[in-house]
Amino acid sequence: MGLMNVLTRIFTNGAKNGKDKTLACIQCRRHFMFESGEQEFYKERGLQEPKRCPRCRKQARTRRR
Ligand SMILES: [Zn+2]
Image (cartoon, rainbow, N blue to C red; front, side):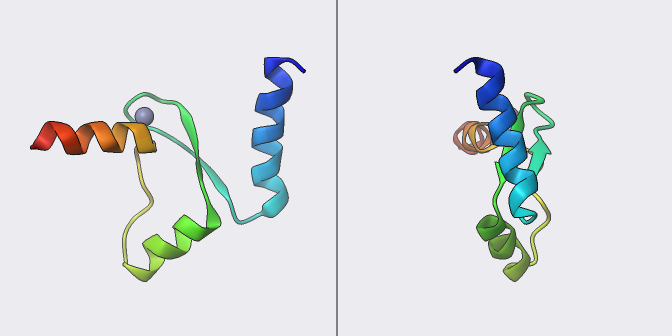
């Protein structure tokens, strides 16, 4: 199994569910999964979709201290 297979699987999985979204991080420009569960969490709290991947979000938090 090559790297392309893994990547293809990740992206097609998102399309299969229809609910999961693949977003691009504005900071590192990597794609990350915005899962349906997370989407509901954000909606409930009236938050906008995350613009950064989980990694960059963590980094931003620790830097702001
Ligand atoms: Zn990022």
